[in-house]
Image (cartoon, rainbow, N blue to C red; front, side, top):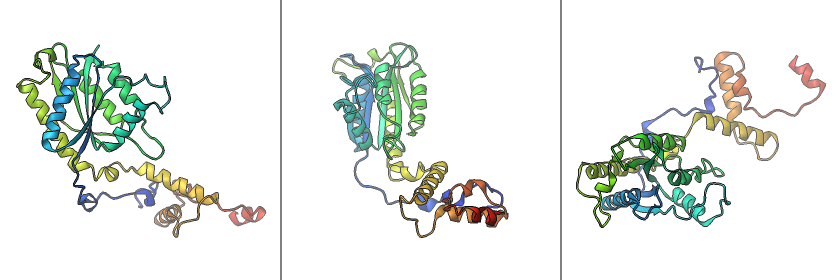
Length: 280
């Protein structure tokens, strides 16, 4: 640690292939699909249902959220049945598919409202962190990638693992038949590609998402919170205080106190003038 005096060793995790070699769950991947239009002939809904058929063929368990009757963000409490359903389904999912029409060069308000209702954190749980994500868009005119690019930004903000492939369907009104099924075309093939890739990435990630999403800064914050709780008497001290070990490691490596590590040590009870004399 001599080259990194400001690093709190107790919060550091050295990446290791062994930590990724998990046996893995055997149940079908759980995929939530969101689309962004309320129109009766919604092409984003048709694309979402086509994606669902493909995912089910691969063996996934799927749910398609219906955005009808989902209130505008903050117009009601989070106890609203549609809000609760959306959040519960997001927690249930291991991967997600987002499909939005392009409206004025960006995702629709209908779609964005669904994402806005998903909190980044609820208690100690993050409803989207570590889940895989596939992004798709449908266009009324020529092909565009404005929406999928915007959805990638949203996915990153929601701490999701967005797969490399994506789908953009131009002139969507030409690509579906009277039964709502997508016609054979390179655009259909691309959706198959995207769903296949999402399925594979979900199998790879779902049992490792907690480890992959673990962050040094958050582990360091947890150590500081633990030290504060011990100092306040709210919890009993652990057998070996991690913050104390980090501070001791830093001091022994550098010969000088580490101010960041020292912040993690629980403050000792003040003994008045004796403290001042001892410190001097």
